[in-house]
Image 1: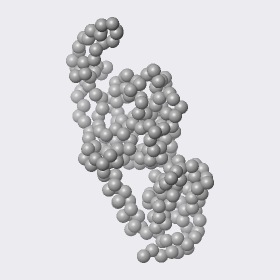
Image 2: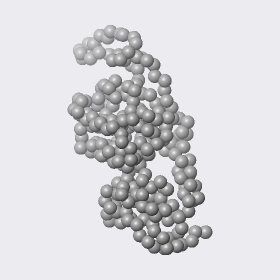
Image 3: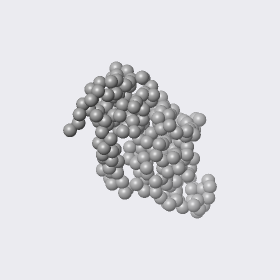
Image 4: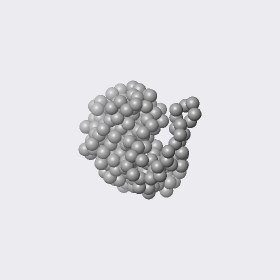
Length: 258
């Protein structure tokens, strides 16, 4: 049974909190979560009151107060963190973590889709060359690719040059495999339709745990898509790592803009 004592513990000002989620990965005890768009203290027994999360809040919504609270329980924290790890072992889609796969890619001469060189005739009346699907070699090196589904300690992330691409990019940019997948790990997400805060927390943990060598964000030119850049910069900051960062913008007609 927990005992209430007078001690220091975090206090969250919900009026100031904008739910950015930067504080969540900053709490090593897992005491904070985003609930209904606001940071919440999951349980008093998980908060040690040391305030590692204070400096991470861009809105200054987190302070330390002294009040009666349940005692900090280190054993409960360890159990809590262990439970979170077990949950991560099953992917959000319900698939077991064993579905995380890294592929052996066939060595292909640079600039060629395959070692076999084939001449194609154009489709009559269109000026477009028919595509021999069998000759098009995928540059994808692993599965899954959705940010939601990828565990932070997935083997293909370890020491990787990482590309974070908006969902629409591979459809708009014809050279995506050639220009962005060769020798890179891939994550895909949509900053408008997906859970931004969950993605921010996941990407932060990936950067913390996987020793990522570089991060390239490839997004569409539409304004909402720039949220992916904001998320990546926040994740790098929250991770405490110095990760080389590059931003690439793709036009809606598929042109490489920057």
